Image (cartoon, rainbow, N blue to C red; front, side, top):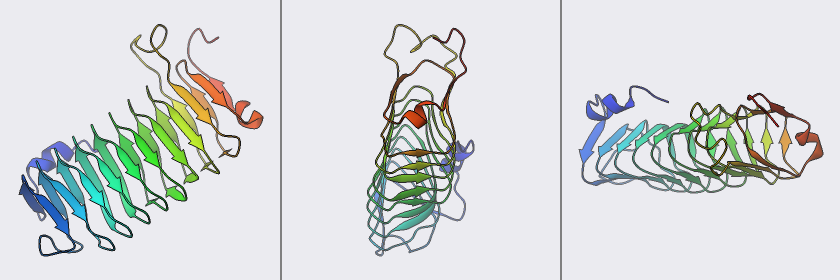
Length: 223
């Protein structure tokens, strides 16, 4: 997670910084290709338009078909992407990521308290990571790991994962015994090149016998 984003959201150099408004990249409100930042406002990238780095505090970001951006950082807001969108990376605190088909993320997607939902023919060049959010992907290629602490993971269709699927260790007792456990669901047509590494208890719903053999349990008192 980008540790400098909170301070950068307040002091932004060489970018467009607006408060309490909607920035539209694709008309006179912002220049195509520029970095864009806002506080208490939304950012809309029009169809076929390109933005540089985008950052938002308390606002949503919407990227239309064939739009693109470099690094995206949000605190308290959602990211919604239409089909054929390309971005460098996504980093969100308290917000969801939703993408239609043919998404390309060159590096990683990271959230703290937010769900990640990616539709068919998407590609992620790095990791998909969340702490408390759910991850749902269909027909998506992930070139590194998928990891979470407390969220459900649902991988379906012809998705292909080149790294591991990891449930991180929960240092508190929450979610380990009495509370509802997260669920890992993997469809029968999914390809997993790595392993499933469980550092905490998880409910498993794995339709492939080959993938089921890749489960590695590494928490204490494993059953």
